[in-house]
Image (cartoon, one colour):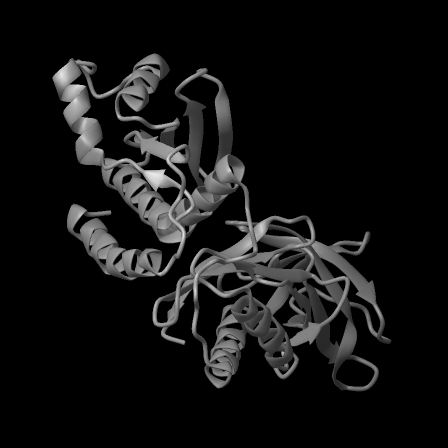
Length: 357
């Protein structure tokens, strides 16, 4: 990720996020002060990736308004004046000393690491007075295109651990119900676009009813997804439904699963598989600072109703995919963060939406 691209993302986000922060009626207490150390880049992650994570995490905390964030220029000034760093890396003890000098209750030490399969953003918040770890968590991402959403998620986990979460907001937030309903309709449409109807083929079908499968994008299907199996029926001399295929494994190389026969003919290599409507649920959106709780309630309810009108979904219990998220900001600067989770709670997709509603 280039430095210019990183700066363009941050410059685009900061005005909206800072304007939203001004909408919060109550400022954080002096005790809720955090100093953010520079993020380290490890493995295949770049310095630009680390800087982006630090920038987005900072902007998110400022936006939500629950934690007072110390200016980095102030931190850099203290480090220089006290000659605390002789290299790019500083020990926890030195980080704690810096936090004490700038009057911060906690100091956050973060990193981003690229592995062979994912990016991992990590953060530890240490109390400056005791040296105890007050927070430690990670967010795993499939690709660096999700760094913005991942850094925001880590920021929300951090502030909830340090100062507690709250669905109430002391801000005066104006909203228009018809606009919220239209936003919910658009959100449902975007969700549908991200989970389209899929068609693929069975590869090798084995006697134990296991089979491989293939799609144009090997990772377009997910574990737990059901497909109708169709192919040539040698008895009826036409294409007919033969059974149901359940995906049990997905990788870069392809997928595999189990076949349940329901038709008259045998399921064969090369049979067509078409995705069945997904059973989905829409949880109530969490609400950030500056947002009226009713905004989250209305948007969640209307999105749930709009999903019922999407032919690729069945809304109800025992969902294969659950949509969860968070909405923050005042009218004109809304930011919605959405995650799609499978039955095990693993993140299938995550994305951010912005709106003027």
